[in-house]
Amino acid sequence: MSLEKSIAQLLSNHRKSLSVAESCTGGLLAKRLTDIPGSSQFFKLGIVVYSNDAKKSLLKIPEKMLKDHGAISEPVAKLLASKVRQILDTDFGIGITGIAGPGGGTKTKPVGLTFIAVSTRYETLCYKCHFKGSRGKIRRSAVDQALTILLKSL
Image (cartoon, rainbow, N blue to C red):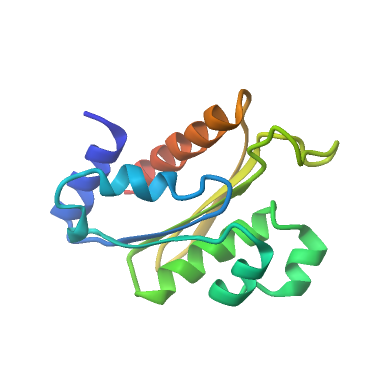
């Protein structure tokens, strides 16, 4: 069984809900989850906040945080996850931010650096990952890792 099908089954069986805020994955996580028939039982919201303006405007990520830490950071990923969860009061929220490449990387934040956060009503955990490969591979790897992290959280 695929990761997303396992998650769908668990969320549905336990009547739990999920929202996601994606940046570098551009909606790929939402797509994979909504490819599952009946996903409306558990999947409530998917939002792509690709630009800093979208992060600030739609999810109220503070400009100071973006300036101090950068959009690709643990604090921003954690806020993406918790803020998207709060919009519809879902049980789980996922936030993903990273650099999919091929450009945009620096020595301190190389291409492939990704932060994935999972928020519940009780805590928000964040994982720092570094994926290799093409833009598409990095995005797919980030979604696979986000699904794996969520499955462990369930």
